[in-house]
Length: 260
Ligand code: HXC
Image (spheres, rainbow, N blue to C red):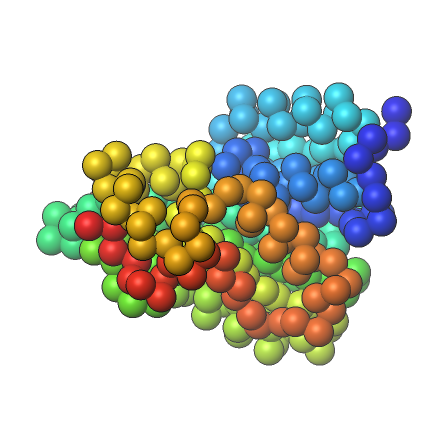
C-alpha cells in the first residue's frame, strides 16, 4: 500500500525524530509522515515506538524505530547509523527528546539539574553531532524543540530554562558553522500546549484558568500548532531561514512564563 497521506511537501524525505513516539514530537513525526516523509523515530520506551510504528505502517508509511537514550552518544550514533543504513540517507533531524519536572531551585539536586541538561542540551548536541555527516550528504536540516521559559525567568524551572537556553545556543551556533554545508538549523519554542506530558507535569489544575487568561490569542496551543510550524521549517518555503527559533505560543511569553 502506498502512503495514503503522501503529498509533495516532504515527499522522498527521511526524518530522524528523537522522542518521536509521543507528545509534541510524536505529533511532528506523524505530520511529517502525513506529508510524505519516511520516518526513523527513537524513544527510551519500546512500547511507545511500537504503537507509532503500527499507526504509520497501517497507513502505508515506512517507520524505522530504535530504542535509544539521547544522553548516550554511542547509542545515538548507532541509531543514526542504523537509520541511515535502512533508508540510505537522512534529510531532517528533529530533536524532541526532553525531560521535565517542577522543582524549586533550593530543593533541586545537582543530579536533577544535570539530568535535564543531559537529556535536553547534551542530547541535542549528541544527535546533531552524530547526524552531521549524513546531513552534509543531503544538505539537510535540523529542528530543535525548545521552550520560552528562559526568555524571562520561570520559577520551578531553572533546570529546563538552563537546558533550553543551551539548546537555543546550539541552534544558532550550528546554523553558523554548518550553513556552508547547506545544513539549515532552526528551533521551535512551544508555549502552553494542551494534551502534552509537559502541561500535565507543569500546570497545576487550579492555575489553568489563570494561565488561559494570560494567553493573548485566548486559547491553549494544540499539538497541531507545533506540527504546522515544523512543516513550514522543514519545507522549501523556509529555505532561507536558519538559526531561528520560531515561538509558537499565542503571544504568551510576552506576559511572562511564570505559571503562578
Ligand atoms: C525533583 C526530581 C524529580 C522531581 C526526578 N528528579 N524527578 N527532582 N522533583 N519530580 C531528580 C531525581 O531525584 C534524580 O536526582 C534526578 O532527577 C534523576 O532522576 P531519575 O528518575 O533517575 O532520572 P530519569 O529516570 O533519567 O528520568 C528523567 C526525568 C523524567 C527527566 C527525571 O521525568 C523523564 O524522563 N521525563 C521524560 C518525560 C518528560 O518529562 N517529558 C516532558 C518534557 S516537557 P537525585 O539527586 O535524587 O539522584 C518539556 C516542555 C518544557 O520539556 C516547556 C513546557 C512549557
